[in-house]
Image 1 (cartoon, rainbow, N blue to C red):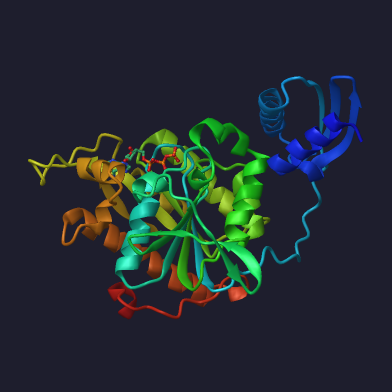
Image 2 (cartoon, rainbow, N blue to C red; image 1 turned 180 degrees about the vertical axis):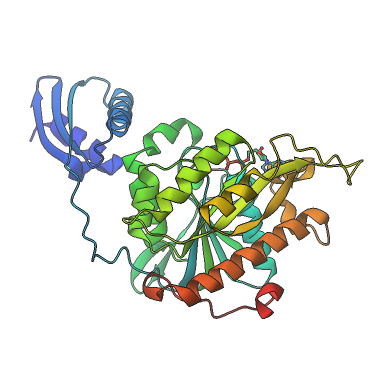
Length: 368
Ligand SMILES: Nc1ncnc2c1ncn2[C@@H]1O[C@H](COP(=O)(O)OP(=O)(O)OP(=O)(O)O)[C@@H](O)[C@H]1O
């Protein structure tokens, strides 16, 4: 085999997409590569093409690359197929989702994880937001590198622990300049490794901070792991609500069928620190609450727009860590509502894809 062919294949292996290669031909400095994309979506194929071109330009600049990317026909969904396997030791998996970007989904995820931990639960947080992984910053562990540990003779990734929460994030593995390479189909593979090849240990809750929107990454995650329930975050603004509605519909689709635990209204109103009684409804009032009524899903509560929430996230100490503050009380109440909704879900829906919570320590709401 020519050296160039070896180098090209080695590069595909490094990128984790060697299995997608259908054919490779080398003629002089020309490499003709036939790739089968798992996603039929045009934009995903475009992303794959850009990522491959960038990787070749950087690592094999002498190559004149000719790319043929075709799509694999989607396999028909088998309605009897049981999706994913349980993650050993993980009792409940909650996906945190938002239709629209920037509504505060990651900030909510970080604070919910802290509140659950404060209630006495064992908590993990998987930052699956490939477009803007923010957990390393929010938990003050930027630059941390997960180590590998041997579990039953296999190498597993050990999550980074901060404030008692176990964390894995794409941000630990890809620098900002590399981000593009992680997008699309390749991100699915990286996520799969963070889910399957991680040693989470015993967890009451694994929170999964999804990317905004309703795309391929969501599909890939719900197919790989049995998500116990989904929480949707929205602001009261019309355009955010329209996207939140799409998010709810996605989880309710027959092929996905993940119970929606409820909707959280973030940035519900603005309260200045000097006038704590004043509420300014700058994104509109009660939008998410009304949407949850319309869609018949629980309303989990509202979080005000408060400067200290943003500041706490930026310095890597989520606001829910504060003791006896109004803000941490808000997160605590919402967390209790989520646990209540989850207990109800586990009681009323078949536990085929989720294991019941057994440890309710510290959660006053569920003792009622
Ligand atoms: N309740 C709040 N009060 C004040 N600032 C907030 C609040 N919630 C989130 N923020 C701030 O809003 C910005 C966006 O939040 P965040 O990154 O959590 O959004 P996101 O929905 O996860 O975005 P994306 O998914 O597009 O990355 C951040 O600067 C965050 O600190």
